[in-house]
Length: 103
Image 1 (spheres, one colour):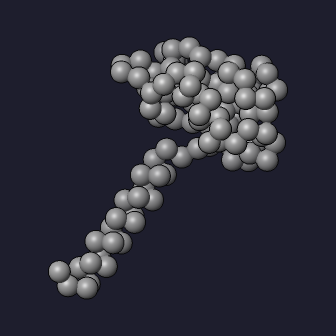
Image 2 (cartoon, rainbow, N blue to C red; image 1 turned 60 degrees about the vertical axis):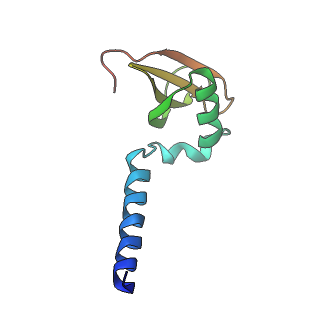
């Protein structure tokens, strides 16, 4: 393989990696400075409460707990569960099947 082809393949691999990472983009970064639990810790807590694959995640201000929570949609089989983790205490605030009007 020629050097230009190797560079092109490397570049395409990098583009695919960045695109895949952005597919599961986390929203709510503007609240991250207020959180005492970071995203990685919140993911671990959520997956312990409901194992599966995280398909959506956000940090949002919402009633209950400290008022700041990570919200995860976790798919396991055909069921998608919504798991809410308090961003200040790490408490699980919600662990229920996602409703028909998911946001």
